[in-house]
Length: 586
Image (tube, rainbow, N blue to C red; front, top):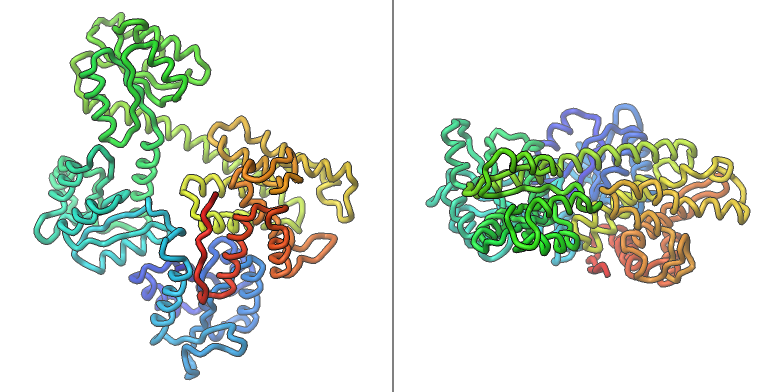
């Protein structure tokens, strides 16, 4: 549960921090000034806001008023708690039911009831949290579990707790976990033996195991890694350090599922030996018995790494490598060669063809696996650097674009937050949510190519000027199209102004031909546009905008997305009294 605390008394802040941490709540503190509250409400989208009963610099009613105003502007309905020191009965609502007055003694009970109501509203199917993100924590103590849960809750991870190794093995056998975090000291079987058994029983799947220990002795660290551990973390970790480790390993799991390794050898024994080793590490493996078959497979599947023998029938390894370098889509694929040839001239020939590594048979399969994983990590680091650089550059352009017009400041952030909430509500997978968030952040980047005289015009637009505005979807797509890492995002930006009935722009797509992410952004974009002020009109009331979305459902808006948006807003308005309807993405 997300809790925003508008606090200017240090004693309150200290008390609340100590209160929230062991309970695993996601919380932030902000000073009671309008700018800080608006920024925090926009970025954090809290489910609960805690206010003081009095503030040093400004009246409490004023602070409460702009908290409620900003919540209404965002279309959210957080519960408002007022932390009191006066003898008024705690748990009692203020006139109009706008706030719940609490004291230190009953704050826990009130928050637990709100959290339970939120869980009920979220539905027992748990759409808001992807089951694939489950983490198993193994330790006999509850205190450390609460600390770990508090550290990981901001990332949306779902944490299960096992008290000993036997329970952990039973849970792993019953359901899939993405990662196991275990202490060394456990009742009965210790954490190292648990790690060994998990690795032995993986059944070809890959599940990282991180060892938690209070010992920094190098011998203990080596013992843990020799037991199959993927990482080793001291119990003196900070929440940020733990969350970073978990995120890195889960990213690696996700990448491995996407990576493809093509193994090429005319020896079935070597093919199967390498295939088994790569699969156990969590990689997708393709196999071919000669160069010609491998080239056809590579052109169809676009592997990340090709591991090939040299001497094969039909097409040898050198010819295969030359063909890969001459194919535009495969020019940059990593190639690892293996051969009984150990002459320097053979190795040099491979280097001239851009071969990344050359193994002389017989070779150590574990070393081959290590080299392949290093190449994949190098490729990912390059991709991530490009991705982050491009994303920050694009966001800077969007910020510069919004600075041209004071009426659209914050529009991108609001549309992005609303789109992401709707995507989660509809149960989108993590990868789709990432693409959706980026697309929503960049959906109006094409407006940078529209003249100020048109973009900032206060009066009605002519047909010609409206046509110029409509070009921004195409301009945005063209700006981003050359960036390979954003290829999945481009269609969402291109089509976010299409209509369900086919009357939108720029291509008049209709129905489910419009990408789902674009349909989600369309609803969030329209809602924010209707409820925001413009030079030529005041923003309309949120309920009126919702009525328009309901009326246009199946015409302008995708009925699935619009219905989910209305349900989400209805749950917000109910403030924990309603039960969420599962709106599965089509």
